[in-house]
Length: 323
Ligand code: PMV
Image 1 (cartoon, rainbow, N blue to C red):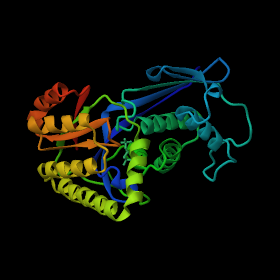
Image 2 (image 1 turned 30 degrees about the vertical axis):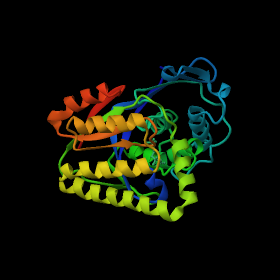
Image 3 (image 1 turned 180 degrees about the vertical axis):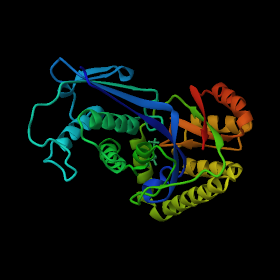
Image 4 (image 1 turned 90 degrees about the vertical axis):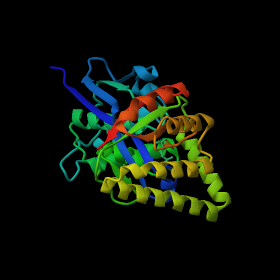
């Protein structure tokens, strides 16, 4: 019988604190389950490890891919890890045995390079499917640490927020280097996510913010402090159920992100359109320069704000409840 393993990981959205989080300030992020990465692994009769990812037009044997390819690097690193000598938990075959023959199918509804965590979601789903298929159980902490190492290969100096919120699939109040802290949602609230349709690599915007910081550390440390303070206040409002007060904080956070030069005319247009259509606040979300923005809305305004975003150029919207 052919054995089969599957796994899925959600997208994520950053509510507050992107970029400043790279410099040790807190940020808030939540999973977005409407979009997800899905992985299926089947034993194969053909030799090798075959990867099929139709969304990115990838059909290849593992060894035909460069070793630093985002998907190949997850598989290589996992195989290396699982072949280390038998761990204290009794996992891992150890030794140099033959590689398994596998068919790995990867699909994702998370737009690439758009601030919704597509890379981290594929890594986490792939890792969990491999760990189950090859009988090498991993804890959430191990999955998270592994996914962070992969993020570091591809994103320069990531804070680790993406892999953390996706590996735990929980709302996260994230401070780089600290133990994971989740937060309670006192009363559920609704946000609409608007996609500019422009893919923008986070690595570049993070590197540009670093150049600004290097040129005037005192100035940017104080901007990051302001962003961190907004994230702290937002956490309190969410926990006490005062979510209506988040709109103003989103607007303030967006202004700081504009100052960091990571907004764009398209993002600003969507943010403005959401506010005009009744959102109580809006901001870009994630690396910026493209990708997604979020707006805080009353549930009954969701369709109006969503249509206004589409009229202002959004390629897609997602209405999601934070609960
Ligand atoms: O992956 P994105 O685009 O959601 O951005 C991650 C958030 C940043 O703060 C810009 C970078 C990071 O590593 O935290």
